[in-house]
Image (cartoon, rainbow, N blue to C red; front, side, top):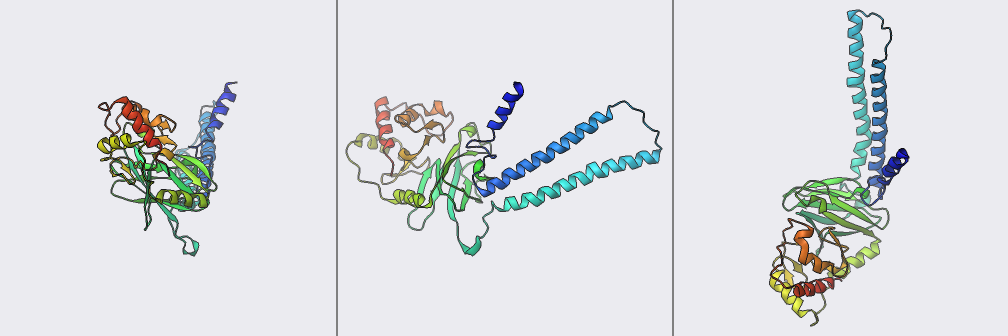
Length: 328
């Protein structure tokens, strides 16, 4: 019974939005097969070492050996177990690992095609996402949308400390270093939603620095971009008081297209269209933004947004209700 429970728990770890063993792209499949190969090789070596260890304790008559025989036997173990085995293991690992890593590099594509570029910056503890374009750059936060079925080059960096960009089901991870741009190429076979996570310890809320990544059909991706490039509609009077509250207390840090240009905190222009708040801390649902505004230091201690104790609860509720409407 215990074995069945342990086996079921182990198999449960082979799937899910953060599992490298449930690949959704060719590079990720190569990484997964490399992992399985390393596991099998380690298993064989482990069994062999344990067998030799047990054999060494087995009582039996041992023939007398001369000093020369002992030296030759010792040399055989050193050459076989200390040089030949690790040497062959490293060569085999390089033979399979180097081509696997090549798939993640932003190398030229056949025919000279240029992949789409998405820029991601890691902050403590949220993600800034930019879609560079000569005409109109699209900016969002904690939410990546990419076209499925085609390679995408991610240009990543850190704004404060070292972070790491990792989408387990699409393969590979890469450090996000302040002052440096690192590049990695990812591709999703088909539309889907994938979990991503900062994979380099970056402070007390490192575990709560999650990224929602969604791969969609290319046509849907272009529609998504076009919707965010459209100028915001003229505001009506229904949320005038909330916009005034935002302008007075939030606009210096947060950008909302057509209203403010703050660049310290996440861009909120399409906040209502996102799936989570606080980089995965809360699910986006009715009233969630107002709750975040009132309790964000309790929900995610140490985040850089100051407390709003000076604002009345009804003002926070009105501000949250307005922010929920910010969707293309």
